[in-house]
Image (cartoon, rainbow, N blue to C red; front, side, top):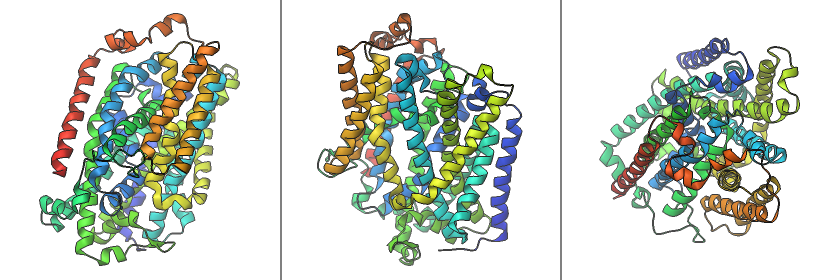
Amino acid sequence: MTQSLSTVDWLVISAYLVFLVALAYWLSRKHQSSKDYYIADRQLGAWPVAISIMATQCSTSSILGAPAFVAFSAEGGLVWLQYELAVPLAMIGLMLFLIPVFRRLKLVSVYSYLEQRYDLKTRLTMSALFLVLRAFASSVTVYSISIVIELITGLSFFWSVLLLGAFTVVYDVLGGIRGVIYSDVIQLFVLVVILLIVFFLLVENSNGLNSMLDSLEPDRRKTLNFSEHGLGDGNTFGFWPMLIGGSFLYMSYYGCDQSQVQRTLSTRNIDESNQALFLNGLLRFPLVLLYCLVGVGIGAFASQNPEFISGLPKINGVTELNLAVPHFMITNLPTGLVGLSMVALFAAAMSSLDSVLNSLSATTMEDFVTRFYPVMDWKENTELWCSRGITAVWGIITLVMSFSVGGIASTVLEAINQIGSMANGSILAVFALGLLTHRTNGSGVIIGLITGILVNASLWAFAPLVSWLWWNVVGFCVTFVIGWGLGLVAAPSSNLQPEYLQDLRMANIFTGECLVAEANIDWRRRCAFMVAWFLMLLILLWMLGA
């Protein structure tokens, strides 16, 4: 599959990379402090934040893995679209419960809430867990796209990592959160354009969309799977685990993960934050549908052209089906567009990596550095330059780690979701206990967190027939019950004022008298629209799979 890109293609790639660095340098002139560097002085609008969040989700593992899952995986097909039904429901929970609280506290690191609600050790434990999990996931992202670059361009893996990583680290260090968000907007635009071009080529090759869909095997055409529950039947992708487990996963990821919440906290007010979540819940499905339909087209193309699969590279003797999309791009797109397609793959990786590096830096700076070395003792601009230096260090760590994660590359899409699902539910429960209970203490929630993760690890080792999507629910329930139970027999720990805790009562939340009431837009209307959107998607999937 190794290709020699034309001079025009390399010029397209070079121009794109130089443009990103130039944009970051221009944006860097606005930085006055670390808070400006991390949350843009809370001056960003809902649209760029929402698009940036979507761009992060549309990562290389999705662009490579989802079409391969639809076209070739043994359990695969359009059933993956069920997963997206959980997104609107998760957005409702976030708009009601988590984001208004974080905005009222004016956080930079979401984990600083845990010190105010519990104690310092809870904050540091959750922050350290985030640093480890996100750094690992980012190194996998770098590895997977670097393999593609290596196979397509003929560059060595070392230089492929540097080509991707060095430019991402440089524009991230310079641009801060503004650089992350505005570059993500550009990168998602490039990615969608290329995916649309590929999609229309595949539709044309199949003589129409209906013909392309009809070429899909009946089992792969199925979009809703109500017959299997995933609780020991060996089926991972049943409707209920994807809906319920996915809802817990997305609430944890969008609401308790610094890489996502940090951008939501960069908007002007609660209205804008909730609007960004609302837009993400509305627009994410069309994006996922697009690259899943690309998978349908790739499957149809492969069945009509048997040499296509044989042209894919083999890794450890196994055909690398995750490379089907880039293989189609480089063999069917004209000169120039091949370079742009490489830019699109770069964009998918960079939009995931840049936000993570900035959030790793923010968490390190807020939860460790300035927490123990107060900023008031520092010289002017020292905090800003330290923030940039920490971003660079995390960039280097991630790139170095990418050389040692090759063992899971062939299962990158599912592996990252599995690893996250071990902890996501328990992490969400720690925040939920803080919001919905009064007596819970830091020691109790840490014990619950560890127990929840260990229970999920046991399910992974000893109950492989249980869908990993249920781990998100199991982890939440175990952590919540243990944390709440231990809080009943021990003294509560809280640094929040009693009147603030009163604002968090369930009754207040459901009568609209809580923090959401500070918003100018009727939150009930947003939530009702999300419910309607969920029902519309359910009907659409039923019609698509009929």
